[in-house]
Length: 217
Image (cartoon, rainbow, N blue to C red):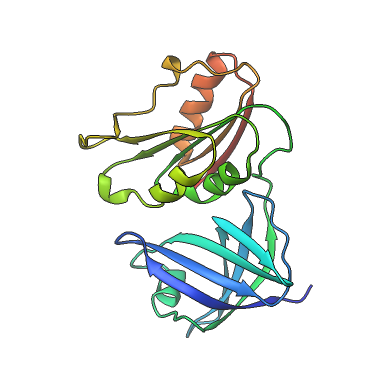
């Protein structure tokens, strides 16, 4: 399979260490909400690959717009490349893949994530057509981004929790699933670090929920 050629049409910092990157391909690309695109990068060492979850997409006239929110770190090879990227630059992706995807069912959905885990589940929430709820946990107010996008999603109920400071308009402390009444057939989509994912799965299983899909990062 040939690499998919694209160009950068937007790159901006959403927080001090999260970059929004939007690219436009020169062909139609099919993406199931939740999937990742595998980027092909090149630096002074060699060519390397890095996968990022798609936040949003739009297809028009055989072109596809793909949007990503990417965490940058000081020592990451991909971070060093992305810090230098400019609007108009050429980029390549190898394919779009991954099995952590929105299920094609009519069951209610609950999307649960922390911080940068927003990327696949926000995409899912936008295109979900059933009853849906969203729960987002961050440490500080400064870690929140895309709140405007969350508010724009049709018929979405949501909670944003801030765990390390008290801010009016946001929920304090961790997400408490025991206080929520979910339909017995609710599908849960988790995107969190390994230990919290394990704990949430145990908590939901104890409450007799069994339709759980998880992505760890």
